[in-house]
Length: 118
Image 1 (cartoon, one colour):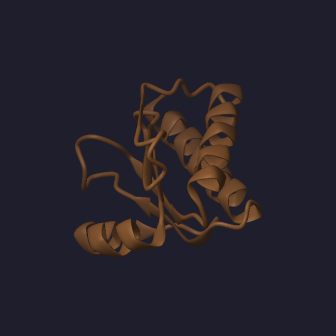
Image 2 (image 1 turned 135 degrees about the vertical axis):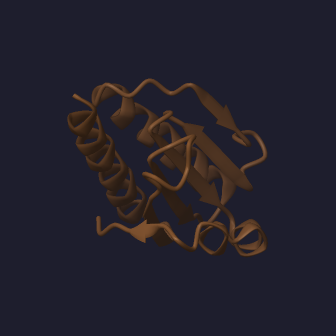
Image 3 (image 1 turned 120 degrees about the vertical axis):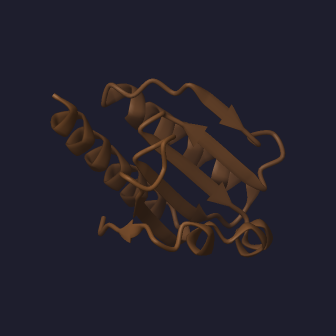
């Protein structure tokens, strides 16, 4: 059962990345954190072009999550639109503006994580 959930989480992470790509986000990364992070299995990281665009992408990813059976347990940064975090427990989505993406550099922080194609 756990293996199936991880496959489902991976598919949702890939779907979120594809959606971000289709909405003109850049520098999209899907990181497999299984065995690395006790908190989540996948990170989806993307850079948006504006707060408005990032909020739209966040709303659409939340809808895809709901349709895929992933309840969103938390959302942060939505109003500011600089770093929007969507927590689906097994998948955490980070939507950054360019400045925050460079400053926080999550890919460096989680440098041991395997990158997943989407």
